[in-house]
Image (cartoon, rainbow, N blue to C red; front, side):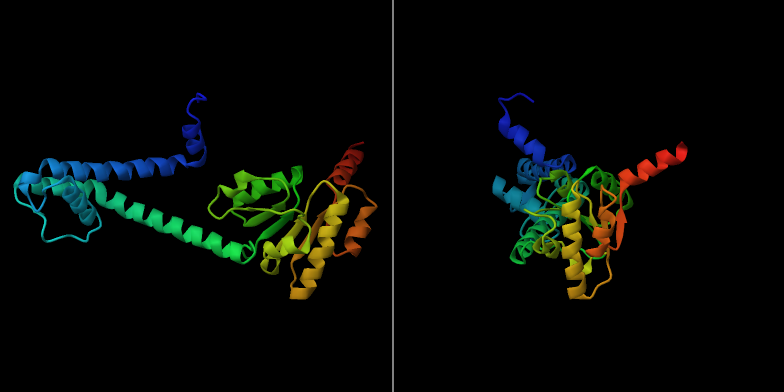
Amino acid sequence: MPRKYPILVFLLDRINVARLIFILAFLWVLAYGSLGCYLLRSQFNGIHSFHDAFYYTVVTYATVGDNTIYPLTTTSKNFVISMVACGLSSFAMFGSFVIYQVVNRVQKIINKIQGGKINMKNHIIFCGYSVITELLINKFIQNHTPFILLDNAQHHELNNAKDGNFLYVSVPNRLESLLKANIEHCKMIIASSDLDSENILAAVNAAKLKQQFNKKFKIVVRVLYEENFSVALQNGATDVISPTLMAANAIIELM
């Protein structure tokens, strides 16, 4: 896209193509009804200006109606029928779209008031990001498994989904971060950053909240070094996994 159209590039980057097509279709049927009624105004009772035509189009699509404006001829009646056939469903869908956006915005405001706490339940919480995290996230998306990623780096692609699967936090393994991810109602915590120390700290804090809320969710910790297995288990982890050690053992078995 040429640089001389920065505003257009900005909008296209942020507007879902399907939504854009839907909005354009809605505007088309609205223009179709308004212009058609205005051009046929002599065949309608009560239409004298473009504003009258626009008003009649809106109340017709909204199924409200206005008994002071109505078609007088067969041509105008047939045009109203074509309006309804073309635009009624689009108008209803647009209304639903607007309501969804309003509800979604209100929900975000409520979340901010609650300190950003999400409303997921029976979900997976990732603390930190790594190659393993990325692979698991891709699987969870395919399987429609609810999850939330806590990380101190941006992951905008995970918030393109309907509910959003990412929370930006300064420290993923802090108690405050885990509370924002609604740990009380989660199914599992996966500490999967590249540093053993961060993952073990996540296990410590998750175990504290697990005891506080008297829950039974699993705390899975990824470690790189074998000596950290016992450390992770002693500090709250219910399961400890080392992909590198598993790979090394698999290679040794092939020898």
